[in-house]
Image (cartoon, rainbow, N blue to C red; front, side):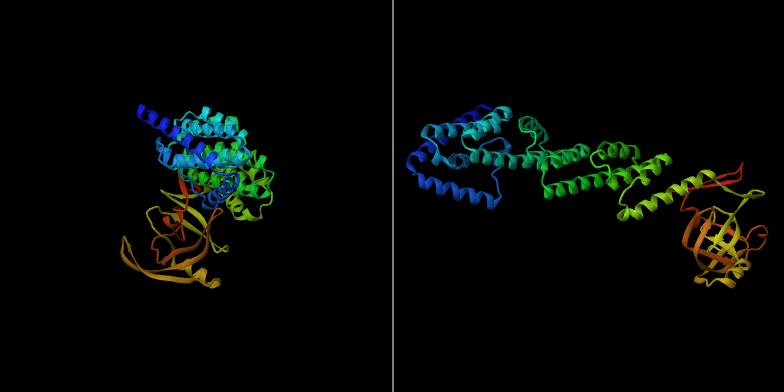
Length: 412
């Protein structure tokens, strides 16, 4: 703080003390009591705080503010106590805005001994400044004050909630969630517990979603494990861990978390999706057996759970194709929907074709639904009923092991 500001604070402090003493001597007890009641009501209904001093300077309203604080319940104080209260209030404010937080809190405690109402009002004003520090990202100031204040009052709900805001703002969600559970443990109030529990869950979900986008599976595990002890039976914590372990290919651990979930009704779709993912991974590890003919590989496929075909893998084909002859087999027992007419460019020139929609198309336990298949004459394709194109393969990460004639399909 520069010299000019120190001088200004000293002048304002002197004016504030003189004004308050003058008010105390001139106002009768009844007037003081009415003024206190009116200002307390006005403060609570407005919910507004003067935080202009956040920048480090004291504005011209500070004298009136100190007068408001000192008048509270002064009808029960002696002149000496009132003078002492005024001095403590002015000094506490001066120390706070000079960032001498430990000394300011010492004065706040002394004020509370004389007049709890004035102490509460100062605390509310400091909270308003703290909110401004968060919004203006003055995190160093807030961190210093929180350290000093919570060392003295470690279970103060208002300041703990402000600390949570700060932790979220500086990207420390794990610590923020832990603080919510600390508040819950000390609340003994069901309404508060429900609110804080909801907020903790919300912070968790937001951060988990961020990490999922980054595919930071190990960080999800570390984050979830750090907080799950606070609420062991909360399904989203277990689901998050299971999903992360699946993507790290630790299938047994993932299954263990999924099997231990209680009250899963609300989360059935998520659990089923993860179990399907596990099945796909297990299948992909085994590989799909292929028949090799020269340089080509043929895989077995199933149409609508009843028609088996053999398709040649063609990664250069955008759509899967079946021969007219195999199509005739399909329509003998199935009602097949025609999607569109096509003109296909082949090595022998353009050919007329059309496409159909297959309700379920399966290869080795992996299905694609509402699957488009082209129907056309396939000259010279003697060993297969058609071609398997990219409109199936694009749904998976795939690899062909040519040496062992295996197709590996795994989820993206």
